Image (cartoon, rainbow, N blue to C red):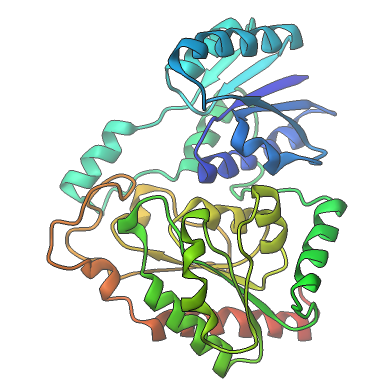
Length: 349
């Protein structure tokens, strides 16, 4: 059984479709699973025994895009898929699924108008269905029983060695609890604030027996000094490839972050998150799904103000972020750490 999953982007969505991989594996005997995604995300699945990533180049001029689409279509057609699951549903995916030659094609229903309506009307009694559940609807339509809602990323032995070596080179103890902090987000309005994250970093480093690993986005490398001012148990990763990011996060006891793709990477690795939501809203269907995850929001009357946090705030301050105090994030982090320590002492995973 050869199955193709199409999901080009973005990072969080690509991670979320891995829940479908688990259901497919549990439904067929030795299925061959392929994931068609953007080239920039393919490294997330290097060494993953469950599937093979087929990359699609998007960083090319419009004049070359048709040739890239045709090249990709030829690869798909030669593979002769028994089933194509289009979990992207846009013009590119429509064209490629038609050119794949597969007789069984199922596309998920985005519910774009429902999300738009939710942003406008803010009808919290009818929240938008989580993205994973929408993917699962497509699987059910294809006759595949649902075995999980949780995304899952595979970590190879090479990536485990990479993480250990990376941390040891920077003097990070592998026996002391490690808290990760990722303070970036695609849109500025979705950022809780660098100063607040830095204050939280110093508080954790001072008051809890642990190491703090600050993981910047490539756009935030200039902020090292701001975060370094908290003591010897604060470490700065510098620029990371996506594969290095995945490996390093896997060593964390908890990751503190904004609503971002990196949040879903942590969940896919089984790492609990403390996630800050501001202009976006959990009712839009992209909240973290881990059992121990903690989502924090001030739930302002104006939230959500856009689908992905891309709109500029119309108020004099970003109250959705301003009204989430550092202490609240600190307490949430400590509660997760305490629970994990209790589980270890009682022999639970």
